Length: 223
Ligand code: DC
Image (cartoon, rainbow, N blue to C red):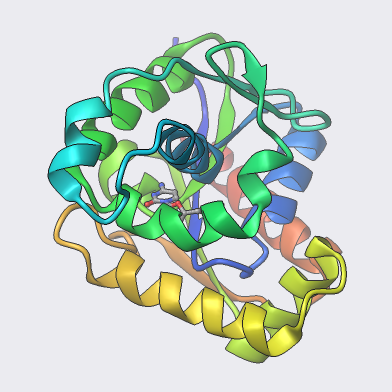
């Protein structure tokens, strides 16, 4: 029997990763894993514990403690830390500002990598979105996609999603995170070998979903 399908979707914040990944998973009856939510959940927990998120040694020392559980239904993804639903809390500004430095800590990445691989290995195909899915988490994924969009489009989408924050503030926050995520030493945001690049700036969500579904069907036809 062939191994279950994994679709790796990487890209910058606001490039359309989440909506695309969920849409593709729904269309194809696959599970869905938002790895960014796991990094956000870890960050939320560090802030709650009063850990200095700009002190990598302090973050590393506590990275093994929180229990993070991700639900993989694309129509209703969930994320809990130590039994508390944090789906709303992890999208707040305090987490936005702290998540990139926390995600740069190797001990955080190693802990979440193990959790991600556990979820991926469970029953059924899955669409996994993040920054290092095609390069580090599942380098042999049969379908890898790298999504990008120009910064103005990304800031506008995020502002609409987050409900009316200042578009310039959102743009500055996105670009600051990109810089840290792309520049870190461990598993930086990068376009993986074999990834198909889709610039979503001038495409609707439905068009991007259709493109990725076509890639998956094409990969199925070739195996
Ligand atoms: O996708 P997102 O914006 O919710 O991700 C939040 C942060 O998590 C992002 O700025 C960097 C980090 N992240 C990561 O380092 N590796 C991943 N695979 C996913 C997210």
